[in-house]
Image (cartoon, rainbow, N blue to C red):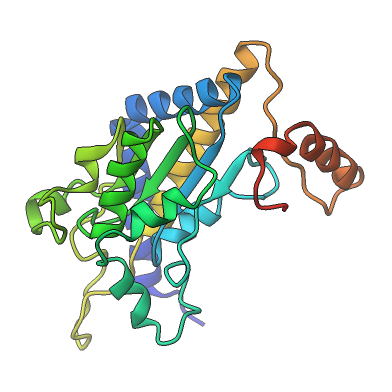
Length: 251
């Protein structure tokens, strides 16, 4: 069986994007990691939010081996994944004004906590208002988005702004408008999105930085181990007990 030319092209494109964010977003990643470490050290809680496929990168840092146990998913029912029926409802909910405020008001998030808001386009009401309202509540807000959308599209929310306008720290995923890396003869639409690959890498890069910063301060990073290795469950049980008041997905 011959290798797929397009598969190689996609992997090359993804590698190129990863190299770009490594080189061009190093300062932002360092700042994000430091902010997460500051929040952990000061007794704050960590939250991640994303809607639609942006939720995948948020979920990837919650309750996983090698991840910070304190990272909680700030979930909005109907917008996480494509399990809602019809699937188009999730996209519609992203454009509902006022939904973010209702979610935050009913969440455990409070001043001194940190929220990572992930939105590729950063133009819809839900992620924009999530960041805006979180900052008003006194949370530190990190945005992971594609800055290209701020010049290639128009805002789709009442404020007329983008996610990047309401964040303390912004990480640019470098994804082109449309999120498709390939075109091919006989294929009418561009295809092969790379946003999940790059955004997840940025999330893990900032988590790695946070662990590094905490260790440098003499603070053991509250990391989880795999439950599939000997001693993993015991290790995780200790971490869960020690930080029980800052972990909400276990209740």
